[in-house]
Image 1 (cartoon, one colour):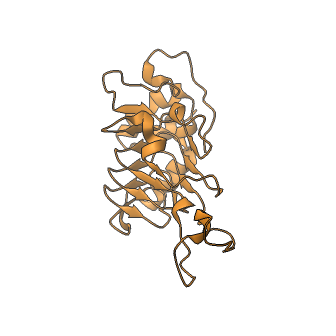
Image 2: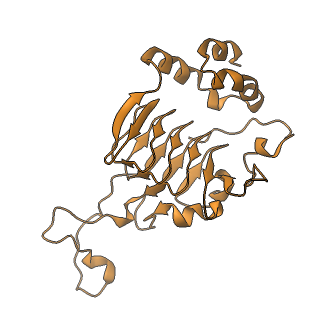
Image 3: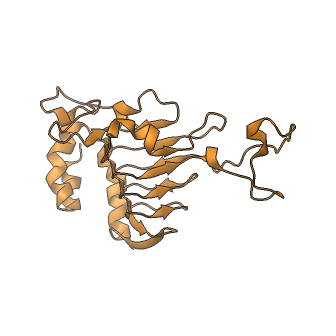
Length: 221
């Protein structure tokens, strides 16, 4: 998910993906990659940022939920993602058995004999593609993959995979619309602009802001 950077000498703080404060005047914004660089359960790609009304540096404490080491699962976030305040990513440590006589987690307390329930329920990790926008207070549940270019509406609860360039909202999340026609989605995915060298992305930013696929194709390195 996290392609290596091909970055020139940084002439602006926001060009350094390892700068936790790319906008010095806005302390509520932070690049996520340096904040989770040593976290065993999270990886984030270059230029993905988090906004927080509290402290963006506490992302792993406040917005990553149930990330316990007795289950092998991870949150993987691509490049150029925008993550709004209070968006939550729920891993599998909070799961309970739903197919037993009781959903109470007897084994974790160590005082109810030695029940052996077998492997803990694990739906898998969470994978966020590149250029994904996750709105305020959205919840991404375990096992979900969100495709490149998708948008998750504020306060949505996402329990299923989201296709690339699709807008999803609600609880549970439902497709609202596709951002681009199928043919254009294929063209943008083929270009994979998020993997280009930084200078090429810089040169292409106007085309990206205008949704000008032809211009973007001409600028491909």
